[in-house]
Length: 432
Image (tube, rainbow, N blue to C red; front, side, top):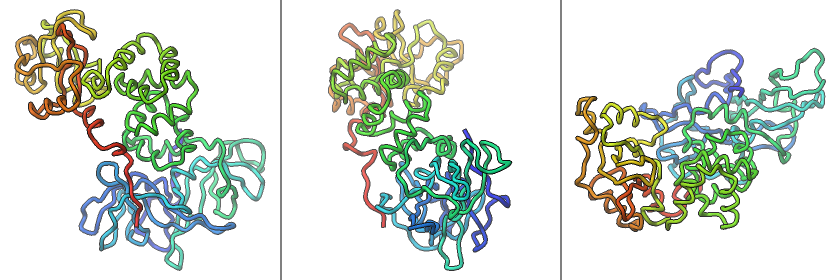
């Protein structure tokens, strides 16, 4: 995927009336107050499109602060833009959550990848980046557009795929509804975002734009992002996919997250997708759907780290180093009799990673298992699961059946998803 276009003239400098800043270069830059304390990171630039060929006026920047919360910072509060940071003027900024108002447009989220027309030739081009500049009045305007030719003849001697720099008034099409916009350049700007942060970016977009981004993501990345979205957004995005791809994405999700999502769908639709999944991938999801979603069985993941009693500490530590494991699942391993896939043989106990770090690598894992804390039955209600984790300061707890066979583990993040208020991911108020 193409990266952000480098602005002509080299790196960004202290803001002045002659400095042009390319918006894609701002994405992810830390934002500091005058005292040098970091406020957050730039996620987008907010502009107001204007009638005719007048360049859009920059209203401010969307800044992400703690816990994926976004605030609006008026452009007048920005005093310095360096290659490494954005610095704000003295004074306070509103910490109310940013909510895009009618007439406002997000440059990165809504204008990148748009197909526009060069007025001089009638040629269709794709937007890669935009340059904004402060003019004599003190306003910031988006007056430069970096585009890529998308094909066909048009400019004599120019090649297909060539990048051009043009003035805003040399192109048209930004005010028109966009069909099939694509998302390659937007994703290039945000390719290093964690799934939770990308989910936050997508939350602020229209349903159509979210669908375009979903289409551009690979199955693994989309699965990770879906796991961080609200239930309504999950259902909307999954419903916009072809059935075969929806099944592939469900296979890439953690079984408990896939089960939660399928549980939000009509039974017939969920069954159709399960039928399209590979049997080995669908089986654990079906098992989870058999439990109520407010019990240990409905909350658990069926894929914790499981080892036999004759495994060594070195083997256990190697297993929990897997970067695909969440921190909660990597915090401990579960020791069982064979078989070693859930439902396993008899559950013997839990080995905590901090204890393993204090033991010789050659020590057997059976020598360090904790048998003092009881596992939970699959029908244990959510309230009791929460109390159990809090009482024993645990980040995960094993779940067993009536024969003491390990079925899975409930992690603290799974519990938080269910005990936080509905809509906690996207509760929002207007910016000032």
